[in-house]
Image (cartoon, rainbow over all chains, first blue to last red; front, side, top):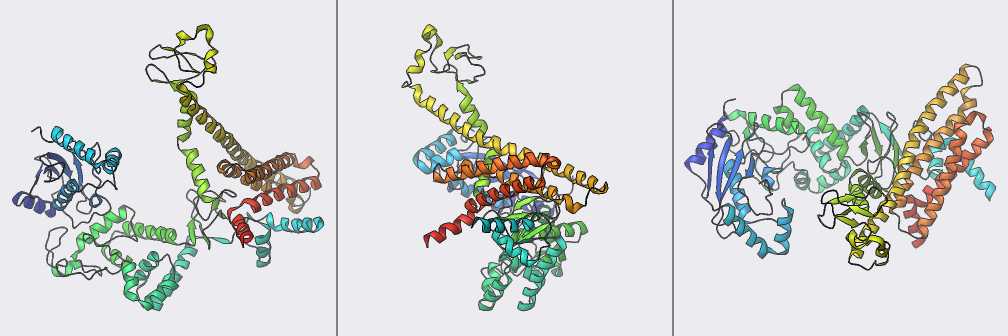
Length: 151
Length: 486
């Protein structure tokens, strides 16, 4: 494998030395481009109290291309589908090489605080979120309790 | 009166016949054709070099009159849909606004925080001072990172719209900036190819011929209604407005709906709905493949009646009873099935005819080819000259043209609302169809048909075609209706 670019080394070091509150990102022992991520559910959101596992991979042309991020823990959210794929502009067309792993994970945490049912990935969830927000939030809490709190 | 219109009509024929051919007509004929041919549309078919020249003229005009680099002129022309005059006027009023709108300059002036020239935010390295560069927004990054950024973007097919690397910065990198960082010859070439394609696509007067591997480009001045353009290279007929195959009398939106409908599997769904029912016991989908209405589910072996979905046991000899009790709970279900079946029947009616004419059109093409070689043989054998046999060739081409229009009347009719207008349309369609079949018959037996008879048939078929187009082609009817309203 090619040598790890300085940028990735620096980002990793900083993630370990000054971690973002509520987020842990640890590179895999066998692949320095693959990160095990845990995001805690933000306060005052239906995901509060949950620990959500994600995987993050830095492709070959990172940072020219966006990292690939996916939820592993099941989550009831209008912008995250059954497979854990995330609908987030900075992971797609709004990616800029000046963004970092840190900023990406912060954006994901913000997405948990502020779901956007008008730009849905999981259509059924978004639909319910729009017509009956109370029930949608109840579902999200229930899923958080069931899937994100067991350990 | 009738003599006059006949006169007028036969006058048209001469130039009608070659309107599928080269654009070598003089202005006189152009004027005539615009009156007689309801599909007449002024356009030209250009080579890549000609289009490059045309684009370069706009670029030069803009860069000369505003004293800017050609590369900046390209960014601005791309943003303003190649309207150089508009840019010049607006630029004289408010240059800053034009530059911001074209994304040459940032909306807001950039602070110093983002423009470090001692540390590259992208690679986290600290190359020497002179190795940094920035766009007008002042976001400095090291040249290696710029080069990598451009490489990734070009590989993804982005050209005119490559942006600055800074977050949320929408300033676009002009050609000279990109090329000053990209050194690989293949990559530079790729970039310039994408630029050209992008320029043509963003130019309201240009459209690539959609033919496979076709390099020709159409130029025209309207993008509205069904507008026929024919490629000089591959002879494909295209609608300049929407890029679909030419589709008069159907309009652009309708042909898109029709082609999507034919391509997607919505009709499969209709078929399933019309020809299948769910087993009342295990809900598996069952297709009826025989006449008998006593059904046995292949999965759960439940016996039931196809007509009323009731248990077959209760039927026995009283089978015909179930057709009388239509007000059952199954009624709603059944009427849905009936509706789906009806919709399918309607679609298939139009689709079969559409397909059939498409197939005939292909065969007509073969007739055309064989006719050409037969005429050549005759000419070689000394039986007259090409001029003597030209009428046969003309007849076959006219037949092809009529058949083409006929094919595209079917999507139009499919989406038409029932009413007197649809009746009129279908009447004219039927007339056209009948005359086309007559003509087709006569063309296939051309050598034994009387020439006068054949030419008469050509007149009739073409007249039917132009009448239908005059009455129903979108922009003609729009004109007609607006004039009646006034």
